[in-house]
Image (cartoon, rainbow, N blue to C red; front, side, top):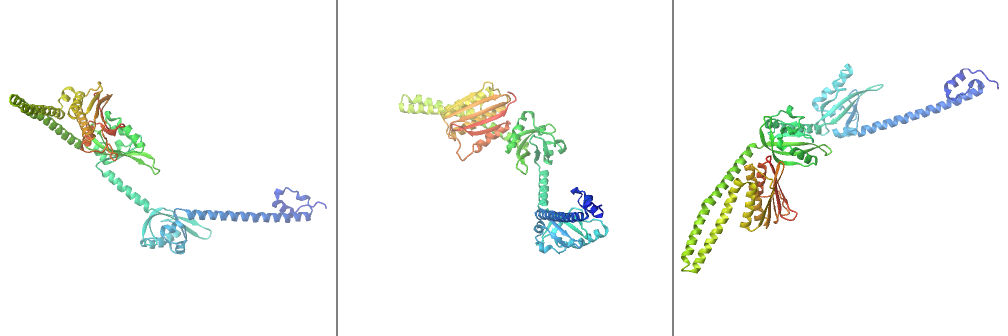
Length: 515
């Protein structure tokens, strides 16, 4: 068949299936019409397939949107231009306590307090008429009303959705009752912190101040603006600089520091006694991110305690003097009379003379013990020869009086010129040795005195029964409390622990700048 000129059919074929790359001008009319019908059929199939793909895509999109709405934590409610509810997702149903069937078709003002219902329809009408938004497009905090009539605070954001033939409004609702309660509690706690007379300070794990309350301003003299961002070492005297790294290391491990008594420097240069409690600050995952410190000025209490101790020490010295100068003299007189009586009875009665001699011997023993007690109460050696000599004499006296093996070991490098510190250490050793003998029933006791640059160490170790398993070494009666207090008075720390071989080890570590 001869080729024909392609007219409109060829143009249609060319426009429909240009990708086929066929030369339609060389086809006959019958072939061209068949080709056109085939191309039309292919086009119809492709259009149907594309329509089906679009429908599937729209369906998947609808399913995704429905899944988003159903799983959203926020309540999502759609209403028409009249304010009638068209849909409410599960979160909205949970927030307000209604089922979807109870909401659809109802005016949205059902979910509002009565005082706000009348104005709501007017807001929508005003917006549609003027375009000026009162609620639309503006997020704010409002009150909602649940099905049971209870009111609650909520965040509300309303957006406009313009469709081809109508306008819808979508409300996004979030119940903020818990958030407002948390904010209320935070404000309450902030007020408590700010109104506290104690210093409450926040700091980083590197020691930089992050918060500073009014109590801290009053105690230390620094304003908040002067301390926030500064290192806490501003408050620490030079001889206490080693405390902060050790404290921060404990905080990093998640440990607390309870009632640590120390000294701090105020803005005006005064040194004050403070009791500090430091706790870790943790984030939501439990990681330690900082430290919270509560500090209380105990300067007046410390001064009073020092005065009480001084009075107690003076009274002990007075009793020691009275024993030495009074009772010992009386006992010496009784001894002399007993010896005279012994001499008078010797020619007449050997038995009577022996008894008088025995009385004189007992009185001499009483004199020795009384003098030892007097030396303990008023250690003359401590004042004249120093702490080491006084402790050595005390160890020997304990051996004589109680029959225990008491040894004194010391470092010849130790020199202590501070008489008040020497007195506290001596009294502390007295108490520890007395506890070891009376309560621990020790037969061997070691007192040792050591030193290194800047520090002095006093230890008392015994082989006694130690502490009962249910008790901690740090617990104890008045004696342990007094030892702790004496250690704190000289800026030191007291450690009491069980010996590996049995018994108790009492250790006092105190700064000694004179060494």
